Image (cartoon, rainbow, N blue to C red; front, side, top):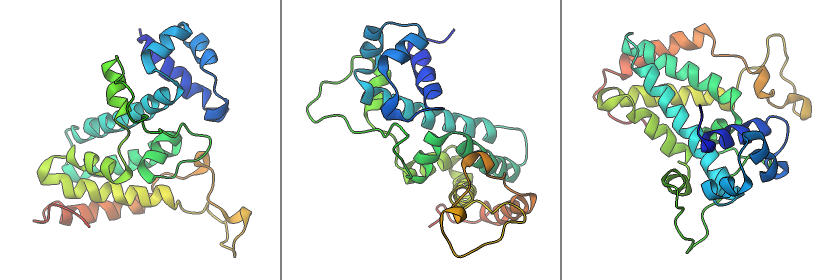
Length: 220
């Protein structure tokens, strides 16, 4: 059974499916999570604190998923490709993670604003960590690469960077012509983004076979 904190975070994430963060009301979240409003404020301090906690949970869940994929008993390059493919799929399905990885926040999302200078630390340890702020895109990529260990960090970083290029500029749907611009030519909505193609996956595997045996430890 989820804790009150997890239930409130789940309710906040569910609310974002059909409304912008500015339209999400704390009272509605408390009702959906079946906890009191006082419990909500005790846990997060404010709506901004809830936003920081929601964003932090997305980052933590992503890194946990990466660690799980890297721990699979498959060849390392296959695991790194799996991380790239999962990054594309996860970012397409979860707007908060997509914003964390790309820095492209919008008005519908709970942009994690910093804690006010001089504010007292939150009484809840998990909230104090959330109040430290989410990782910047580069920091999240670095944390992802670190999950692979020193030997494979460069290859993991490469896989994630290639995945993010696919997230930022997904391919046009089959049969769609490229024209000169305008609203009709903007990127498709996340739900219509295609997964990484087998050809792209093969390219990543080929590059990783070289990069993961290279003496370089970082990728510019």
